Length: 132
Image (cartoon, rainbow, N blue to C red; front, side):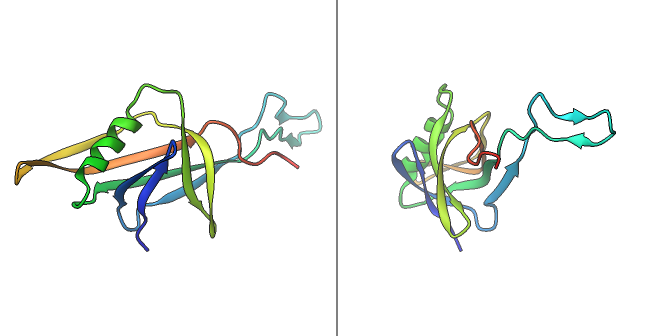
C-alpha cells in the first residue's frame, strides 16, 4: 500500500510516502516517581503512551509545488504541527514536533529541480493515551 499525501495543519500535501518506509513507534516514558522500591521491585510511573511516525517522502511528479510547500512547512520555526497519521485500521491526529529534515538535489530536469531522500519524523508532543 502506498500512502499518497500527508495531512498537516489542515493542509493536504500531495506528496508520496515511499513504499515500505512508514513506521509507527510507541514510547511509554516514566515520570519522576519511577524507580527501585525498598523491596527491590521496580515501580513504574507511566506518563502515558506517545505514538510517533517516521517516513521517507518524495515528490509526486504531478505536483512538485506540494513537495516544496511540505518541505517549507516541516522546516518552519514552529513548536508543533497538527498531523493525521495511520494508526491501526484508522488514523490518529496529534500535535507533533519535527526536529530536522534533509533531502538531496538530483539537479534540474525540464527546468524543475528534482529532490529525493527526504526523511521526516513526527514526534508526539503529548501522550495520546493516559495510564489506566
